[in-house]
Length: 367
Ligand code: PMP
Image (tube, rainbow, N blue to C red):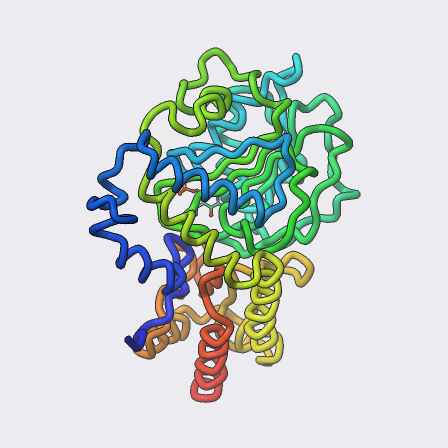
């Protein structure tokens, strides 16, 4: 069946066609159980296989060291904005943490963490998030219980091209919008978390990878289902986990393995984003990316339209005409306006090329 649209949604986002087709095939009768995955007990042998397989594939894909635990929980990325301080702020007596705020999501996380401890914002306050300042300008505190950052700011389109050096202070990373899109050295992190609905599945499940020695320090007020120790100790089955979302995540992990693994996803993302940034940079100011070159995201490409100014009417025309051409979900986040193209793992290189052709034509016809 010919697909009629190309989905550039920021999330929930496009899933690989093969994953959806397989889920459909197995929908009514999973693995000859006679029931849907949705209808399986989370304590059944069949579900145990699903979650076990998902964890093993993830460990393979990211080469997760043995001293790290993996859990699948509810609550989304936002749930982890609370869970991180509730579990880690008491690692040191000062109950403080450093937050590297580079966009809306890290800003929200820092604000939430302030309920539980003393939060030090490492970078000067700004309204315009367009760059990751050089690490030499940061003011990290050695007494911090942890250092927090967001690897890819989904709204602004700002992505770290390096892993911050924290000199032994545990590093916590929100990888919701770029996990499994490039190789990372997991051993550099204390905690990595990611909501599923962008690169690794559908909404409902959140992945958390935790270094073993950081487990067991939760604040006494920490809700039990946010407590890493409870979730790790019960293999994510303390209460009912988001079973169907975990199943879809497992299918996505298999798909990535079958398609060259994380290294290939990284190559693809480089290729897709380069196609689009080149068109922006060679448009003589018709398209403008507000993000500095070294901080640009490979996943969310943000730009404005109009010869050297932001022409909102022209941007609306772009979005409408793109939609008529089957290129959907290109509107920038309401807080920043403009255009945002989200190209997660499931978006093919030829789909990015198709949008690139549309952009070149649109410029020619509207200059
Ligand atoms: N972090 C990042 C980087 C995000 O992009 C998002 C959601 N778009 C969140 C956190 C919040 O995730 P959730 O909606 O799952 O709570």
